[in-house]
Length: 206
Image (cartoon, rainbow, N blue to C red; front, side, top):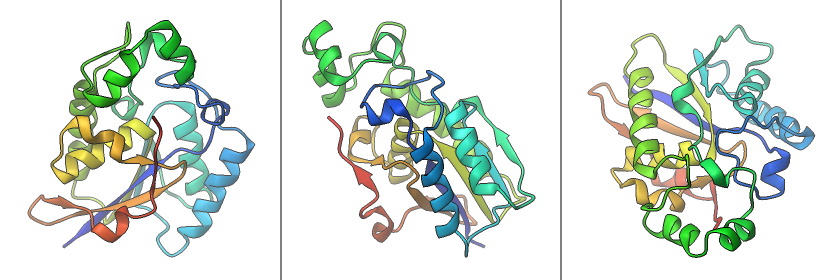
C-alpha cells in the first residue's frame, strides 16, 4: 500500500518578509503567515484529516501545524530534528549585510555548501539530520497520510534526499511559505515524488 507524507513549509514571518536568514531563531508567524496556514487548510480539505502531524519544535512550524489540524483530532507532535539549518552568526541578517561582513562567503555557501557561518551547520549536517528523522517517521506502520511541517532549508534537504541528489542541490528546491508537497511512501520502503508535483512549488532566493 502506498502511503503519503505531505511536506509543508511554515507560514510567513516578519523575517521572511524582510528576507532575513532565520535559521533556528524562534520567530513567530505574522498575520499573513496565519492567513496562509488557514488557506492551506482549506485547500487540503479533501486530504484532511492527517493521521499524524509532526512539526519542527520552532514556534512558526508548530503554529502552522496547529492551524492546519484545527477542528480535527489530529495530534501535533514536535521533533527538533526538523528544525531549520543553524545559520549561526548569519541569523537575523539579510543577504546584503552578510555579503558586507563576510565578502564571498555567502556565494560560496550557495555554490558548494563548503562555507559555514560561525556557530552554524553545514548543508551536509542539515541533510543527514533531517533525512534520519524523516525515515524514522516514514517507516512507522500506523498511518496512511501524515504531514511534516518544517522550514525552507529543511524541506529543500528532504526533497534532495528523496530524489537522490546531494545536499548541495538544495537551492533548486526552496518551498514557498505553506507550500505542500506530497511524497509517496511505497510498501517496499522507497520514497518518490511525481514530477508534476515539483512544478510551481518553489521560489529562488540567492
